[in-house]
Image (cartoon, rainbow, N blue to C red):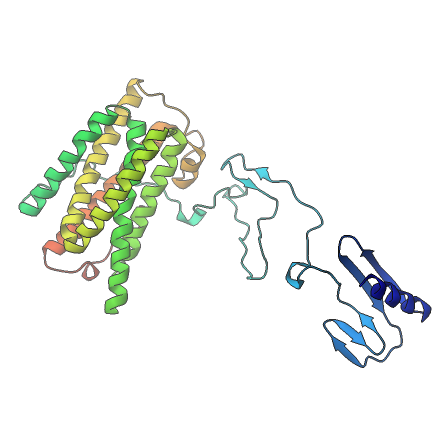
Length: 342
């Protein structure tokens, strides 16, 4: 192969053709670009022209798909807000034509988050009634109410007044019902060729909102190893139990979630009391919370817990409303889904 390349180069030089390239014999990489001047091409194969002899393709021992190698490796830089290490260009491959457009905040600075976009942010409705309560009226309601009260006992014993850890733990569970309900409604819509009335989006929106609560709490409270283990156990059990429950009785499932949200409102209210009394330090709000809820730059933990509590009140209303629809003998798609948190 070496002699073949050298002979070809020499022929090009002798015949008055221009040559430019590089040959690395030991590295198994051969590059050549021999361009004929007044030559009639008689044939071409694999990027080589025979007859007058013109090479325009770079020869290499590597596959053609890997011939383009970046000349320089850019050092990864850590995003001071998200903590993610990003290079100056995040494009992995241009083959698919997919790239993230440049997104900026209202003040013109770059948008630092990949987990949510500016059009998904909102200002929480703080005027929502926090004292609403669905009074149990029948067996299903009473069963749901008692189940939630029983589940609260081990939670109170384990966390006591450590509301930061409590909120982080419970948000890992709170994000499950919306995902399970949305998934099952999605499959039902596919099976029956029916619209969902917006309820698939509403429930998945709830799951995503609860997940953002968790992402915020993780910034405030660093989970210990045994708390992570507890999350794995509880989530595994709760997901499967709720899945079966939703298949058997959606009205009971939504009622249980409605009562769980009532308990969440109570827990966050107690959390706020400890912040106001000074038992818990009112630290600055995490950057992710400021951008997600459009909070002022000087927002504090108290502001974050206040908007999260408003979200939980919204989830309470949505799930009690969904359960009421089922109790009336109707399907969710027959009633418009309450979308948005504005």
